[in-house]
Image 1 (cartoon, rainbow, N blue to C red):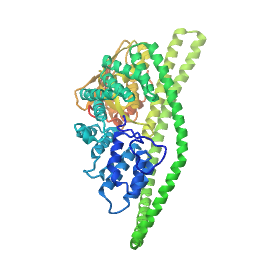
Image 2: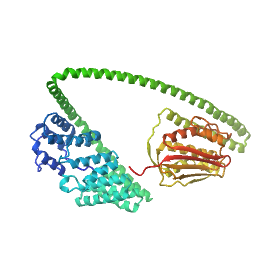
Image 3: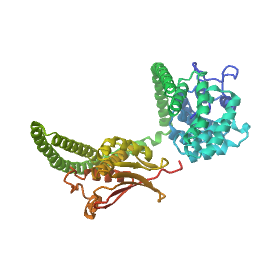
Image 4: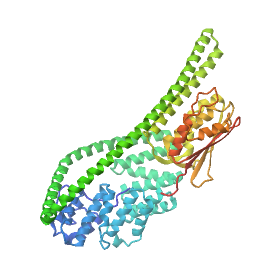
Amino acid sequence: MKAVFKIVFLSFLCYSQFTLAQQNYSPFEKEIITKSKPLLDHPDFAKAQGFFLQKEWDSCFVYTLKQLSIENQKKEIQDFCHFFRGFGFKAKKLFKESKKEFQFISNDFPFHNHIKMFLGEIALEEKQFNTAINYFNAIEQLHPDLLLGIKKSSVKHNLGLCYLHLEKYDKAEHYLLEELQLEEAQNDTAVLVGSYGDIATLYYDQYKDNLAIPYFEKAYHLSKKVNNYQLKQNAALNMAVVEENRKDYIKALTYRKEYEQWKDSLNDQNKVWEVAQLEKQFTVKQKQKEVSLLKAENKIKIAERNGLLYSAIILLLLLGTAVYFYREKTKNNKIILAQKEALSELNATKDKLFSIVSHDLRSAVNALKISNAKLLENLAAKNLDELDSLLQRNSAIANGTYNLLDNLLHWALLQTKQSYFEITAIRLYHCIEQMAYNYQPLMLEKNLVFENTVSKNDFVCADQESLKIILRNFIDNAIKFSNENGFIKIYTQNTDEKYCTLIIEDNGIGMDAALQTALLNETTLLSKTENEAIVGTGLGMQLCKSLIQKNNGKLDLKSDVGKGTKIIVSLIKKQSNG
């Protein structure tokens, strides 16, 4: 998000007020200077104002805190100090502290509309888009005289971004075009590059490529006139994506090379910045000494002012320390007990895993041993037909054993809570296509017809990696239990407002009611298949059940012996609001 105001960085620290002719102040900074001028007879406040204009936030915090420690001072000075601190915390991305400082400011403060703007920007950063819209709407229609340096275009831009994130494209388009009209009148090249890019993204998200591409091209050509490597890099990358979608891979490659060039330039610039940061470390240490000195001065004042209460404070501290250590001891005992219980569960899980490994891997290895013995006999007899059959059998056993080990690993990670898990919005169609692509050779081997009729507009909220594991296991089972010349169909049903129902259907060997009940039973870890030609444990089904449950979904299945199986997975739909 673009910054609403630009504060000039000063290389020389000065605590007195400069004249407007001496500094290139923004309209907002000029208003700060004008409104705070009557208060500059307070030395600490004058220093705080000077550091605020120079973006020296740590020094500004020091002197605002020192000014606020003075009792019985004007409410206007307190408002300005809290305003400086709130603005500084926002600049340092400390949003919680920033909002806390803004709450201390009275409603008649001259820059109260700026506070609404800043709170809106914080809400936008925290993805609270509806809250942000309320703040921006409160200042959108105000007369320019009341804005005191707030740019109308910035308000329009922020509203456009909010509605874009909420996927309310009509409103987003309205505000972004209004912002663009204002920015074109001001002819700020760097800002225009970002504005063109935002509008292009708006149209591109709606698959309106004919409207998006001209704005991408405008942003790209205009980026040539600015010195901002990040803008150049983003513009080149956008053009590379556009040309890739146009299937013009030569131009796409050219833009990719330019993107890498600007990326390298940006990395070089970052290295220079790192050197500058090292040079500032000495200054930071000096500021820390100032903070320590001010804290010592405050402690002396408090001691002088509150001498009679000093003993009571010590007693309260001792009592608080005793209570603290007692609570820590209780907490540690609870932690130890919980760790003991967790260790017992882990040991039980370990024993169960060893049991699975010893039984199923022994069966698979024994099958390979017998098959290899036959393979050697037929190799000596040069029985090519039998050799081909045995090699295919060995391949099937190896693939089954590999899938067992892979599922075993993921199941163990899930049981021991070591797996990474993040719920995001996922387009189902592309995820299924990616998984099915890996199984095309197996489908061709059985001459299976595969159909993916899932809508490209179906989005679900799930962890991407766990969803891939679920799809991989169900597609693998569908292939494994299908007859030759059969079919596998994957499609969705959207009869529920909350859930998107995904169905994996095959016309294979199916299963009876007893096996279905056992597979859906949460207490059943393993269920051996009755198909003697397939090495299986049911661990994949158990893993899928656990992962679907962790994704807040539901699992069901319908099957008839000899007619096929339907695996029914219900996942939460992506919500349309922010």
